[in-house]
Amino acid sequence: MAEHNHVVSKDGNVTMDRVTEALDRIEPGQKERILNDFEEFKAYLGKRIQLAQRIGLSEEQLALAAGKIADYLAAYEEPRNSEEKLLLELWRAGNKDERHKLAHMLVKMVQQ
Image (tube, rainbow, N blue to C red; front, side):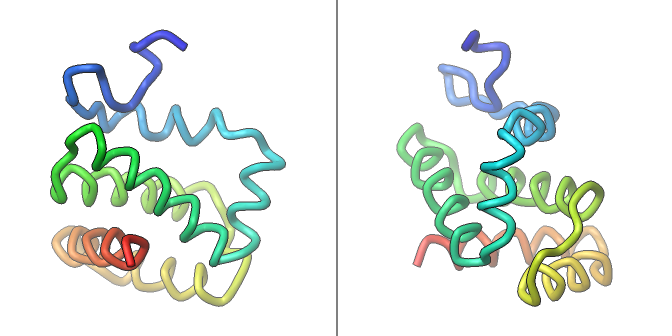
């Protein structure tokens, strides 16, 4: 895949606008497996965060990307379990700063 399709370029720069494009490229069956089970979701996100850390993304960059993912999920996906429903309700209730803090917390949660 060409570099212009990636969220992270070879020099480590993150293009947040490409997060939605990357999420849209996930195969529907794979997306269902990830979203149907909260533990699967955490594992998937955790693997992506490990990869991002290996290429040098900062905690702030990880939180910004997690926020973009949360925005996408809130806009385009229905919660499939009680954990996702709670996260959606928290996301919608929060202001911009609170959502950013929640994104940091999500990153920390999947790193454990």
